[in-house]
Amino acid sequence: MTQTITASPSTQAPPGLTFDAVAMRFPDGTQAVEEASFSVAPGEFVSIVGPSGCGKSTLLKITAGLIDATGGHVGIGPGNLGYVFQDATLLPWRTVRGNVELLGELEGMPKAQRRKAAQEAIDLVGLGGFESKYPKSLSGGMKMRASLARALTLQPSTFLFDEPFGALDEITRERLNDELLALFEREGFAGLFITHSIAEAVFLSTRVLVMSARPGRIVGDFEVPFAYPRKPELRFEPAFAELSGRVSECLRGAFA
Amino acid sequence: MPSTPAVPASDVDVAAPTAMGGAGGRIALRERGTSFAALVIPPLLVFLVVIGAWILVSQVILAESKRFLLPPPWAVVNVAFLDGHNRAELFTSLWLTTKAAMVGLFLSIVIGMGTAIAMSQAKWVERSLYPYAVVLQTIPVLALVPLVGFTLGYNFSSRVFVVVLIALFPVITNTLFGLLSVDQGHHDLFSLHKGGRITRLVKLQLPAAMPAIFTGLRIAAGASVIGAVVGDFFFQQGTPGIGTLMNTYASELESERLYAAVILSSSLGIAVFLAVTWLERRVVGRWHTATRGTR
Ligand SMILES: Nc1ncnc2c1ncn2[C@@H]1O[C@H](COP(=O)(O)OP(=O)(O)O)[C@@H](O)[C@H]1O
Ligand SMILES: [Mg+2]
Image (spheres, each protein chain N blue to C red):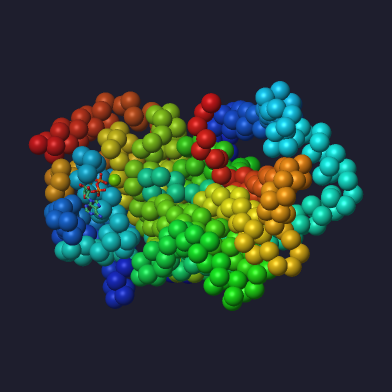
């Protein structure tokens, strides 16, 4: 596997993600992120919930190097970075297989190897049999699976998710949550997950961060004590409801 | 990566497989369901109405003495198409005009797409060239006749020039629009994985621009036929094109052959349009759903 996106050329960064007083002020004066400091270790799955427009996507874009922060520093450990966008961002002129092979193609992976990686990823997300379908004939959930498979082909050691299931219906979303959890347990990457669903955040994560309204700051930090593997029934346990309630209360404060 | 699925394959979204089959089935049905009859009968009816109106004007409304202005359809068929000499003359010219239109269209596509690609790569290229592309569109061919005729000769090359003059602009604008309207998320995806300029152009921008390019192509194809006829009209040396014939027939009041020439050049326009539509379906039909609204 080629090493693709490495953070600082120093390569001294510890594994996972380290945010150190990251701040972002856009040229038009919008202070999107005021101060964010936290870290995500391998095997950790951290979710961020926060009001719309508080700078969550901005934080991920900074992490991925798509935009440059105006303050602070993001350290990214060795290994590939996976990024799942809010939209599936599949290329409509490519089949599922063509889309899943794209990253390998861009990163110069040999053809045989990327074909194999793509097939494994497709099978892993349960899209076997749909390899030669075009995106226009896929449901929203299947598009998201294809998008996930595409990111998986590079076997990322750090995974960013920007509200990937936000546009899906409840049933599909819970199903994909279960599957994402299974993937996480299997691959053990460092996960940073943005969502506006508290239940989703608590169900998936080892830790939930609450971000305040713009300018964004981390105003809440909740350890999620439930052991993996987590069963779907966890969502209906009192402890789950109690923790969700506390996150929700903090989030309401964040709007103020 | 472990090859055993983390999830059984049956675990695809509850609704997905059925919805898929259903939707796929419905789409296929609708495409095939537009039966040949439904496709052919409406235009055929319009055709009959037009012929009816033609006969009505020619036989009832126009006085006998003025009938030469619009002879009935059968007269057109008799004089222009059943007479061997006239038919040969018409079709020889039609072929020449077709060649001028096709060569001009081809040049327009090459030059137009090349220009649009250059414009999409650098803002300064766009800023410096775009105004002239617009000007190109507004120059009356009439004003250029002496210059072009003197430079390229009053024959085929000049006719091709007129075609390019008219067909180039829609190719440039539509290609540029397509290249520049790529989804930001797709650009981010390519940035994230070190997609360079060329990679981005070939694997992202050009495919994404295909539907827009075909829109431009369809306009340019129609324009190329008009351009070729206008070119025939202005540059009349050598073998006459269909536009040259129209000019001659009009001045000699050869109405039957004049209308035959009009019908032939229109047919050429329709044929070119259908060819582009067919090509479009071949190239982008599989993945692109034309946004035509639900009707
Ligand atoms: N390129 C930009 N220029 C100016 N303001 C921006 C830009 N991108 C985002 N913003 C603003 O920054 C804020 C945070 O945006 P974003 O990170 O997308 O929020 P969210 O938390 O909903 O993902 C918003 O108010 C948004 O309007
Ligand atoms: Mg966002």
